[in-house]
Length: 230
Image (cartoon, rainbow, N blue to C red; front, side):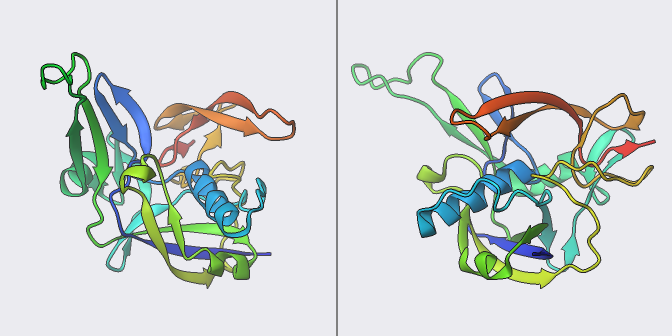
């Protein structure tokens, strides 16, 4: 198997679950390797009926591409950016918030504490680019995938745009979490925190152990993509 640079075109709004602030469900502005692994594995299962948990395990995080510009994560003055675009500016252009609430059937008023706000990334000519170590013929068959949450409500559809062999890709991330990194360079994948000195952000992420019949969830701290290990 070889590394391939894979591009998907976003067709529907997507919600990449991140943090929740009261009634607001915030979206990430990049796709973690864990999310993409889930989307590819799910698409493969629906196509073949086989569940292969490790088939797409070696893959990177995916980042947006607009026209010919591919965005990479970094921190500038303590703020997360894609290239030189601050997160707030990217959200202003590509993210919107959808409002919903449950209705009391007796009064036709909104139920108390039922307001729900969901951040979604709009499909404004957005593409998503990342790296996958897999059989190319299998990747070519996964023409459509659903990424993120709320796919039952018309969210998450992306179609395969291109597959290019990536002979110069040297990292070996597992679900977007890598042990390999270059010091003082922005990380494009998460790196497990083991008392390294770094600039950026630390996140608590879940790891899934599928070695037993009942999967285990193991929580670990990771240095977020865009950070620098000094």
